[in-house]
Image (tube, rainbow, N blue to C red; front, side, top):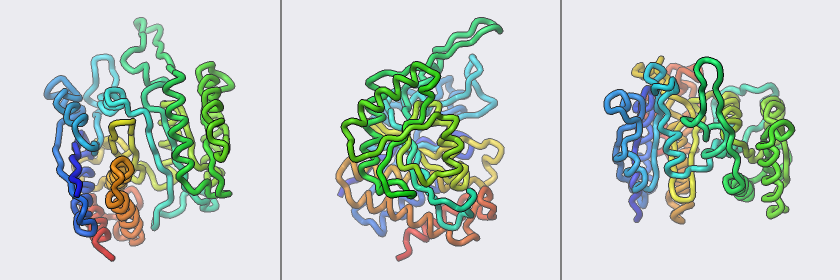
Length: 362
C-alpha cells in the first residue's frame, strides 16, 4: 500500500482557504479507496513569506518539493507586495524553472449544474498544453530597461523545449477520445507563425514531431484567431499546444467558458516532478471572507492523483481521481452547493463539505 508524501504550499490570499478544502477531500478518499494513503507537510511560499523573510521561495520549501511525491500549491502573490523592479511575487514561475516543469496542463470541460455560458451550449472537452519554461516568460527577471525610455523582453524558443512539449501534446491526444465535434484525435498548434520568426520555428518543430504521429490530425491556428474559434467552435478542439504566454492567455479565456477561474484546475509537470494548483490567483479582495470557490483546487488535487497513478502504475490513485471528478459533478448538480462565483450562496467550507459527502456516497 503506497503512502504518498505531498508537499503543501498554501501561499497567499485565498490559497490557504481552498487548500484546506482540497486536503479535506483527499483525506475523505481514504475510506472508499482504502489502499490510498497520504502524508502532508506544509511549507511557506509567496508574498507574505517574502515580506517576512525576503525570500518568496525558501530553499527549505524548494527542497521539500524536490523530495515530495507531488506538490499541492494554493496561490501566491499580493499586488501590494512586489519585487524592487515592480514585478509581482510569483514563486510558481520559479518552481517551473527549478523543477523543469515544462508542461502546463489545463483541462477544459463542462461541469454538471453550471449553466451554459456559450451560445448554443456546444460540447466542451479539450486540453491546453502550455510550454512552461521558455517563450516570453523566460525573460522574467532578465529583461532590459533603459530609464523611462525603453524596456525589452526576449522570447526564447528552443528546439529541445518545443520538441518535448509538442511530443507531450501528441501523447495526450493518443490517450483521449478525440474532439467532441467529430471524435478525431487532433493537436492544434496555436502560434503567430505568420509574423514572428520564433513562432515560425515553433511551428516547424511541431510539424517535424507530428510526422511520428500519423494517426493524430495536425491543426493550426494563429493565436488571435484562436480566441474567436474557442468561443465559436470549441467542440473542434482536442489538444491544443502553445508557447508560454499564448498558452497562459488562452487558458484563462477557456476558463471563462466553463464557469470561471474558480472551476479551472491546472498541473505543471515535468519528467520528475509535478505541481498542482488552481488557475486562479490569490483574490485578495475576498481573502478571509469564506466565499472563495474551492473547486479548482479540489480538481487540481484530482489531477495530482491521476498523475501519481500513471507515474507509479497505481490504479487506486487513478480511480480516486475519477471519484473526485464524479463528486464535483454530483455536488454541482444541486444549486444549493454553488459558490458565489457561480451565482450561489455556499461558502468555501460548505462547498468542500458537500464534495466530501459526495465522495462518500455510493
